[in-house]
Length: 291
Image (cartoon, rainbow, N blue to C red; front, top):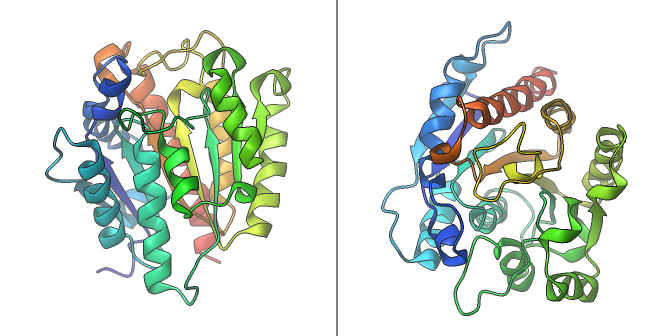
């Protein structure tokens, strides 16, 4: 492995979790659309020389739980110490695979047997659904909390929209004492500053932090190509600035971008936004990796 390689990209071409909820299919093609947009980006920092594309998780099936195991194992095997990763979905149930793979990697390769993983979910949805009768794209953080790889005090739901979540999901969040930052508190230009404050606090409490970005956190004017588009949400500028802030935090070791759905995209708008967000995350990461 070249010493110049600092970052890796992993795709999860799977939308079985969306199918389980009856959502708009197409996010299985998300990784391909992301790569087509990402490869076009150029800048002063030689990110392409420092980034290895590790390909897609192979052998995706119709079995969601099996897909999770495959994705987690792939992330575990492809993630190396002192290297940050960008995981591209695919439906957001793989937010669980993402966390599980990173947790297992740290437990195996770091000096910490039970690593304290922190996570910020940037999303319109809580994604705390019970996997009953089946695992769905709304289940990732229920699975992560119940499995013990994620502790409620190190989990932040950021940008949650009230009309997107059923009462039982709010009740579960209350029971677990999950911190929720609702979108209604992030209007009028406050989102980026609040995100930075919450992220710094989370980093102080964690051994490593994962950012999970569901693209439906953005308003559909900026991200029409998602499984569940929203009329209101973050702007592209806000999300990119959040990614820059995250990239500059040493403890943020992985970014997941989910629900990119090219089947419903307009002029590749959402794919280009996802690629730009990842680029700025890695560009900001390169600033601290050089120090």
